Image 1 (cartoon, rainbow, N blue to C red):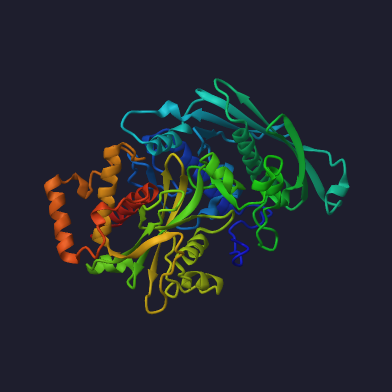
Image 2 (image 1 turned 45 degrees about the horizontal axis):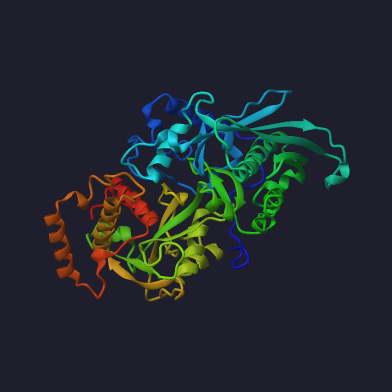
Length: 516
């Protein structure tokens, strides 16, 4: 993405010399809330962004969790990552419990990640996504190392700078040694996955724990890591592991250096972020590993409405039109299926709003939002892209993502949608009530086939709770109101990931009091 467009500004500045009093108070509040959650039922499924506590906790019955947010994901990442007392993530067939770091003055410091098999949470009548979400929510509450199939231990300590020539400035430099080791218990975890997670642990430790100790000193890291066979040692500067350099420009040199011994081709591909259950960045890695090991990462979802802001339409009692498209039959994933969203994965360090602006420009040719951000237009009335509305965690057997949700209002007098013919077979604006019913019917068909990634009963408040006669009546009513337009929308099958985000979107609208 950086090669195609100037890279956006990032929200990960260099560490300050010391946290202000307000930051220390915020950290104390975060720890207190985490302690309360660990002792109450609130922790069974509701994802909290930082210290924002909902007064209406939700126990997830589906394959998504919703969380409010007032800022981009990357605002709350590595600098404060280890403030909380518990954390969890997902990779392959494992839920990862991230223990609080153990810092002892003058002794070796330690961080542990325990891998728990998702089979521990298996229940009848639930999809793979619901299982993963339940594990993600529960994993941080497990006592000790119970049920862990593998434990990764990262230790770090200050050491002598044997070769000063390895740093740029000899006057004020230091050296830290980091060592990661894996202990397997009841089953053999794939070696490549162990290697990948070890490199994420190194980044977590280096950019939070060590960085907070060395302040502005130039720091050399000596890192001992698992390899596909045996282990190896790497050396790099601490500054190379931050996603931006001191000028604010993208910097992935350290991450690429870490992953080169595993696969040099992958190391040169796009770098993205692995996150925990709160959407906080744990570390970065080449994108192919995200798909190979189904690692929890971050991305965006967006609804595009025609001419009228979708929320203004709801408030005025009008029915907005939203963009729906059908994928081509030649697509490798989900050929010929429909989608009501624009979506994409955030690059490492990329603010969620910039991801949304980039994706809608690339996929639909709508560039006003990207132009507004690049020209630093602070007036949101000029930008057709909304601010981030909420985050939801979507899990399937092939994709796990903390999704930041946006809306985009396309002014058809100023711009029009264009797409690549090899990507999209058909696309048009569709009345919102048709999209709602078509989506619900698509979920029903997935449930009947036993392939719905959420729970068996997906939405107690939805139109699918009506009996068949009522549903048929609604279909006929909408067809008489709008006509078919040569599109049999009542047979549309949507991408499952998009349907999960749609459920989160509908829940958000109900919570915010929008009557449709």
